[in-house]
Length: 187
Image 1 (cartoon, rainbow, N blue to C red):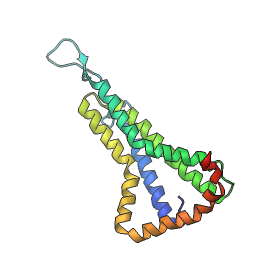
Image 2: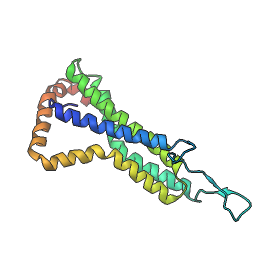
Image 3: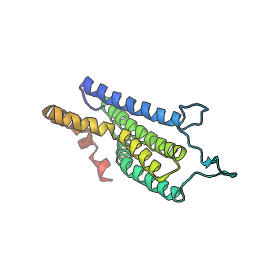
Image 4: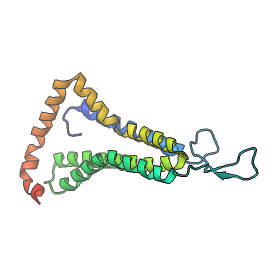
């Protein structure tokens, strides 16, 4: 990350790795496997007391899916925008270690956010057939995506002075980059 404190950078990396690992489990669970480990839902159902099979999808499943994905995008959009903005603006900075660190932070944020969006779309579509299942699956994916913000809030509550000091140190450390590249922000 942007901090000079290695333990905070390690914590940030650990959270990103945890998020990516959970998202990978969601992806693996949404692929058809002839085992109990797969969460994939069949879209057809063959009741025992009927001769014909029928669709197991609720009539208003598609609108519910679209609404759920729209809500997911709203929650993830801030991270996607922040990561994209950081990467794009960083390319105009002068070369150096700090530019590289800013680029890496933006790229990681953008990558994990887009991965979260991909997993959300794929998992919800593959594993749900009912409206309530769409909502529950969406909330679970959003919870995993918000893990980094929740850890930051926890750190703010447990170590408020240390967090404020670290943020101020980051602002001071990177202030000259923003001052020297002020014309980038005015374009």
